[in-house]
Image (cartoon, rainbow, N blue to C red; front, top):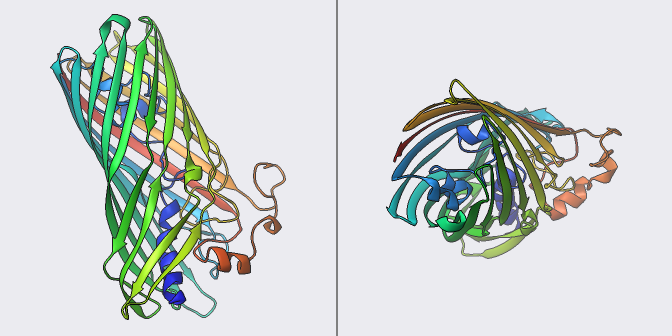
Length: 422
């Protein structure tokens, strides 16, 4: 039974850090208009992407708004994905498409309703390598977190205040495979959660200055499989619970003629992902449970962006920068996660505003690395001696990777189109 439990740790734990971000959240999502300025949106979002950023923002629309955003993330990882595999190898190129579709309508002078659907975390990773016994291994993971969210915003126009609330239904899907013995894996797990919310406000002090705040509650999504195989063993059921941590965001926007400057500060409660228990049932009806360790730390993210409008203010030019603090744990690394160090993103974008409709495009570059024996990086351990031994990892986290050089690079390409009814 422990053999089956070990298999499922390998199968599931890679999910818990595969979203190509600090924890699950991806800091370079939605929409092109906002990504161009570093993803800043909490204080000034005024279209249907507010359902994702801050539901209070749909209170700024006129009679209605429709928004479609398409995003494409590409990149690769460098890591030690398998305890018994080669050290420090590069993944196959990763291509991850994203989208956001949303609409909002004013149903009363003071009340606006909105709805949006979007992946909130999604990634795929694949490594190909050879073991010492000659096996050629393909080791891959695909993870998708989807949200569907209706929202409502209430305007208090006398004081320039908007308050918003969003309800979040979450769907999670995991597809995990490895074709090598003895830890071959073939499993597909999915599940739903119906207990997520967002609440936020925007407050315009003057025509030049606006502040905002948004809080996203923690969600727990139970994922399960009614079959699967690995290590020559078939099983009838496996399940675990994935936590998408709470997140608190605040920001401001300052406008002066054609210029605007924005900044957001976010606190991710990623320490809510400490460990998970994986419950299993084999074909003989035997049950078991085994824990998997993450030991993530809370994370803070700083976003800054600027906008300059030219051509009679119809063409906004945007630049941005994002800093993410370290959240994953060097002692429990994963070949499918952000390296256990801080990361940076630089962004740029341009748009065209033609009255009722506008179109925007943007580009983002995110990167981070941690090198063993690198004395210039005091934030992370500088030698392999600071990590756990292989024996300690087998006992605590057999699905973890191993110490080595960890790096990732992600390129994001974005385009959005929106239409407003006044």
